[in-house]
Length: 155
Image 1 (cartoon, rainbow, N blue to C red):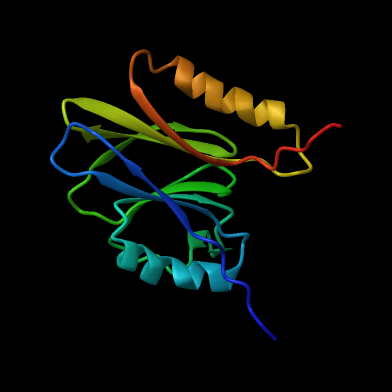
Image 2: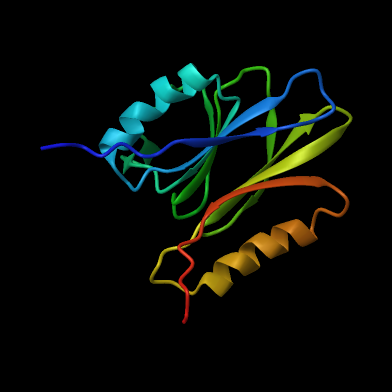
């Protein structure tokens, strides 16, 4: 039996601060094995910020995450923002059903990081509205979105 490990994609977020933030965005597919690879992968990539969708939850906690890491979950626990770095301090901006947003000071201006998830069986317009409501409340601010939206082609 082989266990599929999630493909890892990460994006670098440039800012005016001295350091470029390394952001890991990944859908873990509610798989325990995927969660177990998250911590070593994050350390290896030296990630400053994790934008997760569908993490494996057990006893209301994301498994495999050190307790010293800051964790911000959506109401449904289908989206999360995790900050491994003790140098970064985040403020929770919004916590919706499948979307969570945090603000981090990145240089002279803050940046808001949004993690969102949409099930292939739900109305994607509702999830896009959640994201839009957050964006609308943040005029003239840097925003970074990591989302797994399961968009379906209607054709």
